[in-house]
Image 1 (cartoon, rainbow, N blue to C red):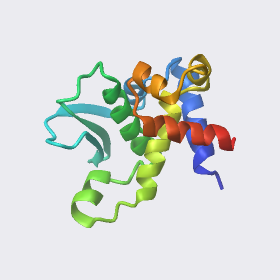
Image 2 (tube, one colour; image 1 turned 135 degrees about the vertical axis):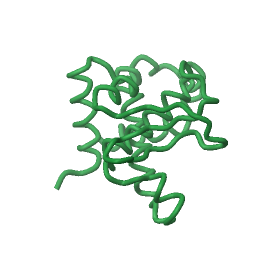
Image 3 (cartoon, rainbow, N blue to C red; image 1 turned 45 degrees about the vertical axis):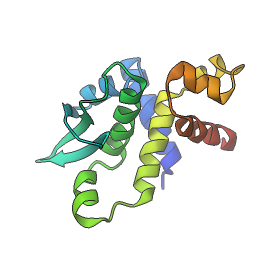
Image 4 (tube, one colour; image 1 turned 180 degrees about the horizontal axis):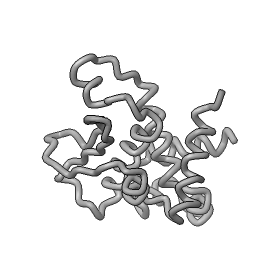
Length: 152
């Protein structure tokens, strides 16, 4: 049985080879996953499945050119690719059955997608704080990515 680490690695490698990019918006578009930017209050984003169509919904208050937008898009793309039939918004709102494992896997996908080995090499002389300031990515995302690097 394929581990989640291997599945994430395989998916990212596939899309990077086909599209030549790790951009979550480009990958979503290629994979037929819609992206809707809408008012979501204090929710950054969510993934949902509506009539067999996958959608990533992102809060309109997050600028599309910001690192946070990329992080949210990558996280929700992780749900769309890894948990295709799991309607995360429905589970959170109505059943309270969303496990932390699903969220952890989506976070792991986002960390792997947005922070490549080449990027880590480029910033190897920087502290984690400097990396986060330069990229705009949250410290937790970097820590998750570095944890995997150490374990490999």
